[in-house]
Image 1 (cartoon, rainbow, N blue to C red):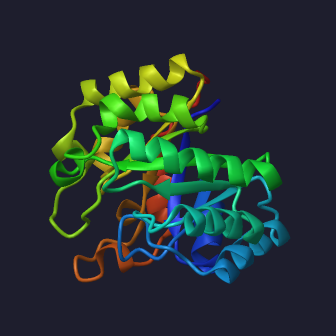
Image 2: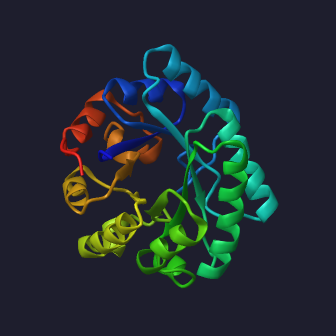
Length: 247
């Protein structure tokens, strides 16, 4: 599988911008938090717009939030976004121990695969110090993926307002270890967390399968940050870093 760039988009307009610049995955989200949930109609509109403009090959991803309140509603939410047209589904497991994350994750994966066996499913676990009290993403993430039979794992930062990114919490050797553990299982390693253009090359070299960005794809404006506009120029710059060879 080739390494891929995911660009988070607020709706169909930004999705087309990202697709025209070559992004592999358009991630529909509301960028107020790590995994800001979008409306199902927004997901559906993005999928239809991409299909109708020649970008059917661009995968659509989305999420069901950082924290899950109950197992039943988490399963319903995951089924809902799959129905809306998401090809790849991220589900946050914040504030859960490994045991609890496995129990919830199994239910989500099993529920979606019952009706949508072709969808990709990725638990999201968080590297912030406060979150690592519950579950260590680097050490426990691969074990979680194996236990719930997900397609991979996303590691991300939970708090987007403290000015720290992924590499403020974990090192490149950490990410290499995380990635190798998942690749031994034939699963994917996804990374996110205020990743900058300057950092992205190291992450590709670490072997990760998907790098997820939002702020780095937006026009530079400190006042708007993650709420800025995704631009073709910025996405093309990021796409120029993606290794062309296949793993």
